[in-house]
Image 1 (spheres, rainbow, N blue to C red):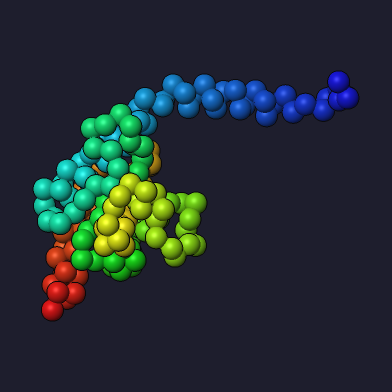
Image 2 (tube, rainbow, N blue to C red; image 1 turned 180 degrees about the vertical axis):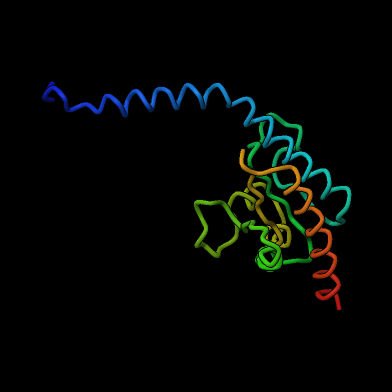
Length: 156
């Protein structure tokens, strides 16, 4: 009602329908792909880098978001780790995407009962269908290097 014939963009509507059909057919592949990368990253970090904590549900939990992982590296400010990894083309963040300009502590980690040190040392890893397991392996290798180096400098 109130629309003249030809107002609806039928080709765009049809295209959107097709895009949704394709995307929904691939959603399980996307979930599995990003969840495998997330689990690998968390497992490698927990096994190879001491004093690290996964902030959120256990990596095997169905309650976690498969495309993100928030991890604390005690003794290193998150902001410092972010900039150190940028040197290798690895881009992580210190907070949620919706709070990229905020400098205050994470209210979510605070409510979860994380200590101020754990909150300050937390970083966020994000995964997409475009990432590869090789990229995650590279990230882990550089993390091991960078965390060891930063902790040796900071603890002097």
